[in-house]
Each structure stands twice: as C-alpha cells, then as structure tokens.
Image (cartoon, rainbow, N blue to C red; front, side, top):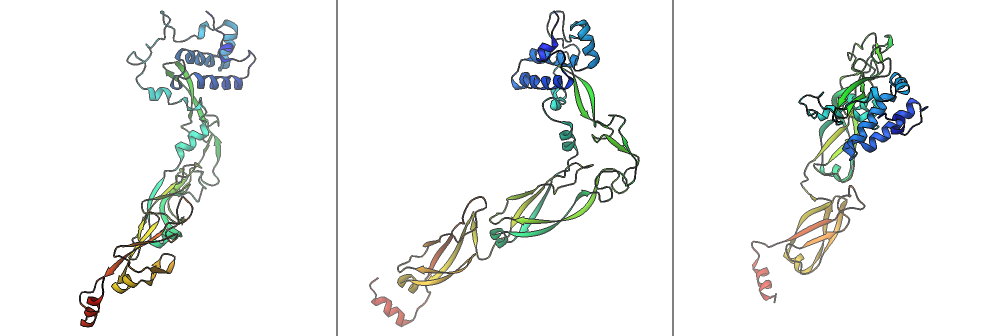
Length: 354
C-alpha cells in the first residue's frame, strides 16, 4: 500500500526543504524509542524524510509513489535485520546513535567546539590561614597550552592563502549514510579535512604547526574569596589549555590548601582558642585580653568560673563563604593550679571556707 510521506511528516506537498527538516526533527524527537516513542512510527518518519529530504528521490516519489523507497520490509512484513552483523542488528548501539546529535538540536558548531575545546587544568594553590579567612588576590604562573601569538589561534601562517575546503565545499560538515536498526539515516559529521572550519590554508603556522596553540606560560590573577577552606576549589572559566583553531579554552580548577595557624584553630567558620587564668581570677572574676582574627577584645571572666568553661564571642569568626554573616569565636579557659605556694598563702587558703 502506497504511503503518503507528506502526511506522515505533517507538511504540504509544496513544503520547502527547511520545512521538511523542521517537521522531521520535531517528530523524531517525539517518537524516538530512547524517549519512550514507538519504534515503527520512528522508522516510518525516518523513511519519509530520507525520501522527501533528497531532491532527486522526492521527484521520483511525486511521480511513482512510495513503493520504490520503502525499506526494511521483509516478506513477513517485519523489519529485516539481515543487513547487520550477527543477524540481530544490535552489535554496536553507540555507533548507531552516535550521529543523531544533529537531528535532536546539536549543531555542527557545538560539536566542533566540543571536539576542539582545550582540556581543563587542575592545580594546587597554597594560602595562609588569614588569606583564607579574609580573602586575597594571588598571582600564579601556569605552564600550559596558550593561544598562538603568531597566527592568533587560526593555525594559518600570516599571509598564507586561504581556500574553501574542497572536501565539504566550505560547509564544515560532511554527510554520510549510516545504517541503524531503524533503517539508513543520513547524519552530519565534522569535515575531517578542515576540522569544521570550512576553509584550508596554503601554509600552516610555523610556530604552532597549524594547531592554533603552543606550549607557553601565562600569569593569572586569582581572587580568593573570604571564607574558603582547605580542600575546596575555585573554577576559573577559560583559563585552562587553549583550544585548537579558535575553539574555546578549557577551565582552570584550583584546589586550595590552607596552612595551619599557631594561634587559631578553625572548625568550619568558627574559631577556637584556649586561655589560661589563675585561681584568683577564677574565684573572684576578672577581665582578660583575647586575640581574635579581627583584633584584640576584652573578655569578662565571671567569678566562680570553672576550668574548661567555654565562652562564645558572637560574630568574631570567619565570614561564611556561601551565606550571610560570620562564624563565632570560642574561648576555652583553663584554671592554672600552682604547684607550690608560700606559707602565708597556705594559711589564708586554710582559713577560707570554700
């Protein structure tokens, strides 16, 4: 029975190639088996587009109908897998679906950028305790792939002749037929001759050999945010290895190492310190000087303070990296018991009823 390919794609008989392609993309996206669609419906949509999407086949279809173009029909009416190795047709599903990106919205420019994108770089940056608490600006030197300064990343020797790629006629892409379990599909791929640029050069850059980048050094200023802690990372977009022939650079991932402080101990955004007080201060109370990361402050010790008591000084900790406000400063006091005392002090203590 003749099939109405125009009706299958939902377009009129005078539809343009652009209209056909748009209709196919929408229907293929809707009925793709990986998205829960119907396999037979997807095969029918593909068959219709493979015919109408080709000008010559379309003219033949308009004249003779669909019979010469129906594919995959076995005598029993089922789909014919005999053309696939092993007879099952599922030998390498990665290859079968590998070229479908352009059908479902992935353009050739995106694929070219992803293929030529520079790799990411991971590095370790050591900072001191106070730099982590309050933030800082650091300058680092990276050895990496940098954009070629001679050809400005194009890969062509300055002054060389630029020609349209003969392989792809300047489109940057080539079309190839790929057999799948749903029939033969036409897919786009990056031109291997020009790597998607659509042009070639009579002479490659003498410095980078046509790659658009070379080994070099780059100084980068890095802003360290206040509150960062050991083991956390900073991602700097576009500061990784340079991409090839104008493709974007990778990212720089800086792992942070924070040196320990002799005076302060950090617990997330809180600061902990220890102070010693005398027996007299513990019994009678006193005011003592406390050093915080924000400067010195006075802490009131109430009378009768026990050894091991912890006082909280609100808001004197580290600025919260992903929040509002600061942590707190905790002071643990230790009462120092003298190892020996004078006879006079001993008699006074013996007279005390404590």
